[in-house]
Amino acid sequence: MAAMLAGRVDGLIGFAHDQGPTIANKSGREVRYLRYSDAGLSFYSNGLIANKATIESSPDLVQAMLDATSEAFAAAIANPDAAVGAMEGKDPQMPPKVVLLQQWRETIPLLSTPNSTGKAPGTDSPDDWAATIKVLSESGLLENAGEPSKYWASKFTPSPKP
Image (cartoon, rainbow, N blue to C red; front, top):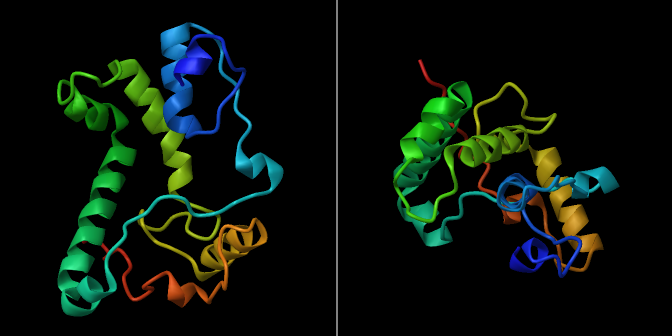
């Protein structure tokens, strides 16, 4: 990001929803995105990770973490201004509120896929896992690819809220 801000490079690989608004704010220049999805690549990127031993020995803990994360995302989606306001002043290196809000608004569409639209944040889809495995395998990033169950504990889904 420093090289781009200094004008030494024309682009970078990164999280557009995070770095794009930051670069635009710091440079005052327009930032355009070339997203993987624009090239037909759609795959999972970030998520909650738990050790197999934890999944087996503490499934209630795993479910509670998933539920808390899903609930927090849902609340932040419903009220972006309050979510960003809750972050103010927590870290001296945090970008200005206007940048945080733009980052969050850029993030919201990434929290669901056509297979999970309308479901609680954190709801995964076997088809999305299969697509992710295919992309990673075809790009050489995943050898000996397995079924989604090798990577995803599908028994954990966000609990419905009353």
